[in-house]
Amino acid sequence: MMPYRMSMVCNSLSIKDYCSFVFHFLFRSDKQYKHLFKQEFADYLNVPSDRLFLFGAGRMGLFSFLKSLNLKTDEEVILPAYTCVVVPNAIAYAGAKVKYVDVDIRTTNINTQLLLKSITDKTRAIIVSHNFGITFNDIDLIKTQFPNVVIIEDAAHALGSVFSDNAKVGTKGDAAFFSFEYSKPITTGMGGLLVINNEAILTDYKKNEVDLPEYSFWNRIRIFKTLSTHFVSAVLGIDLLKRALFYLVRKMGLLYASSQKELNGEFPEQYPVALSNSFAYVGFRQIKKLYAIDQHKKELSLHYYNFLKKYPSISLYHDKQFVMARFPILFREEVGMNMITDVISKLKAGGIDAGDWFNDVVHPRGSHRHGYIENSCPEGEYLAKRMINLPLTIHSRRIDKVLKTLKESFQMIAQIND
Image 1 (cartoon, rainbow, N blue to C red):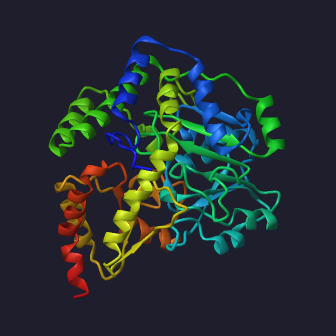
Image 2: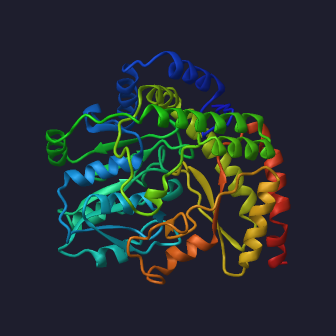
């Protein structure tokens, strides 16, 4: 199949998708698209659609699920010490204790052996992430040894990835949540989905399910404007213009991002909310083309891998089972921190949106850490300091230019081993 000819907006949103989205946002509010989006997603996962629940953000699906477990204040939820603040926030909001376990730098995901040793009679649930789209393959092992502990997949980065036995990410845990935020594999601006695979938990969840409001009109406008800014800047592909557009939207108060309350670990307004109809529509448009989108991402990942594998001072993560949200690169110890900063600067100057998430064990740096103790998870801290990531939303016609920019940016890294 030919690569998906994206206009490279927010991962998978084409020009046609965007124009249709604008029409639906401005003129229509058809509730059927929530159902259609959910049904397409259920068909993709090969699960009944009544197991799926749409939210205004993936974190809200996680929170709602944790609340349904009626967690006690002395019960623990384990998660990897390489995550976004919104994940431990959801645990704390649900009334449980946050417990961090270090990651394995070979996978960027939670270290299985350390996890198994960390489980106690106070452990009620475990959140296992598939960071960047790299699958965590030990869920069955954990279930076998601790059948009464609830396992939740953080699949925010991993739509399209499969496990080593070819099962789809999101289908092995008792529950899983996906994110449709701007940087994720498909986008609804903001949005998320919860899938519950455990029948007993699903029954209890449905008994207490309540109808949620949508984002306020003002926040829907902000999400629309932010998504539009991502779209326009990506289509034009001019870095200086992108900065100007985001500066303007931010100054006008129209940029939608995580609130300062969330970064501080405080309970925010409009949390949780339901996914709005018009945003469900744009998700529906993309999920129908997921196979083509995945193929494009895999092809671009392979380009990156084949080009970068010649540098012995970096570690790469690549496998045919991964469909990554971003392509991660880990700089080894011989690469100085100043050099990493220089590489990022050169990449950005060349028009490549090099990312630094997660830049802390609880990203972003400076967020509320929910009791994390410095140096307690050294592998997570190591990744946070030395990992960067590259976009997988580049049009096929730009790949030669991108590889040229990579070569120029990594010249100093090549000199280390000369």
